[in-house]
Length: 249
Image (cartoon, rainbow, N blue to C red; front, side, top):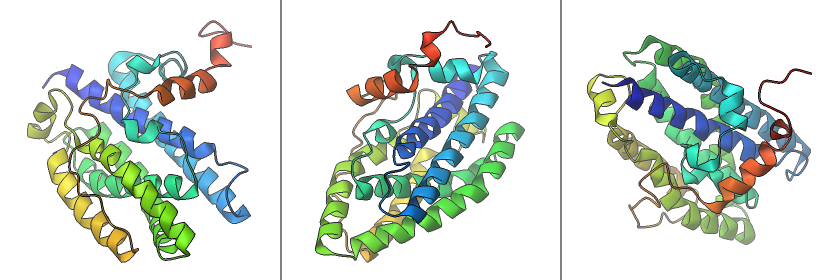
């Protein structure tokens, strides 16, 4: 197993959490009800905190500081799935995306807790309790909207139709990932996908939604990004890039 394959995977984990957390933070002050405004903002902060943990581990391997990784990389150097970089859309879109990601993490994290890499296992164990709360929260919203009004159902189905192929990219193995699987550092994404599909299809169907038939991911490489990531980073990095990296006020 090469360190390169491991650090690439850790960076992908961190970037997924960061970009999704940033997208969710865009709902602050705009959620449909005050209680949810607070809840979803806290959920976004959790994702950013989880990203910080993975970036800190990446730093242990590369000596690259998390602040540099977040604020001074261009889109081409990010390794998140396109799934998390799409604009926040409407409430149905953001809630469904978070639910699909939460289910993915609810399956992946118990396996990462058993990782042969002690630091990965430690971080996964720290993240897991918060993600269990996330899944309870978002799964309830999926059912509430899917079985709600004709309008809420329509919006949920539209979101599912758009997001499904993007979500499948979460399970595309990274380059040389088989080494990590064989060494029991990382779980097999194909096994995770089978369990994820079993869980989400059952819940989505119970929520009155029709799961798209496609089983092909929207992209097969995490070096491929949409124009939305470039725009997101331009906004997110504007203040930091106004100064030389490392400057202290």
